[in-house]
Length: 233
Image 1 (cartoon, rainbow, N blue to C red):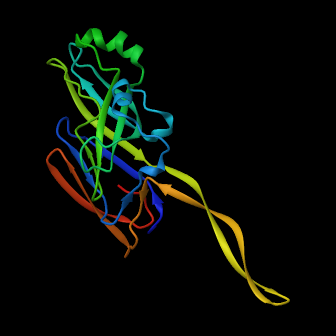
Image 2: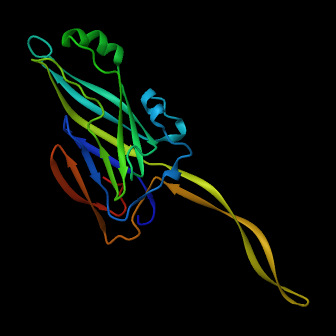
Image 3: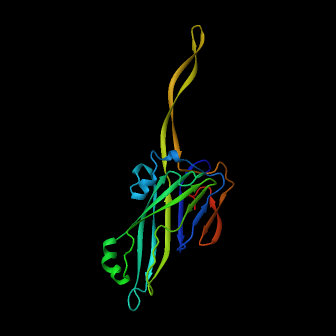
């Protein structure tokens, strides 16, 4: 809903094996880095050890592998994704989004698939996306790059991301209340507080039924509209 905290949800079938993936969110949408108490630094991202306080979501990435047996052979590889809010990687950006991917069933893959492919499969991978003014989420590419020797093929089949966060802070203030007394009225100061919610994503201030969005992936540009009561993308 307008002016409310929301989530960024991306579900992409057959994502491109190379090239950027860019989601341009509705005009007027805002992002707030105060939604997390800590940010993932570049050194943290390089080590794959972003602080838990910077976590903003999760996802998964799936690749279809075929042709590794003689004849045939077909299976899927899936990486789970943890997402963290990081310091801006480029000048002018709001923040970065660090995606740490981890191969599921890595032991089985190493035992059963690696010998057939004649190569190892990445167990972990780190991708840093950009959160840009506008509002735009820009991934440099898919979370894991995998090339396999012929006649085998590796085809990306699914990418999912779900990003959201909120941090609530206490804001103290003083109320001034006019109260009657025997000699007239006086102003009394009463300490009070309010709770302020800092959302990673906040919906635009107004909505006339839906908001437009745009997605660029694999050189193809698509657009659509999002209901004012739905999460984004």
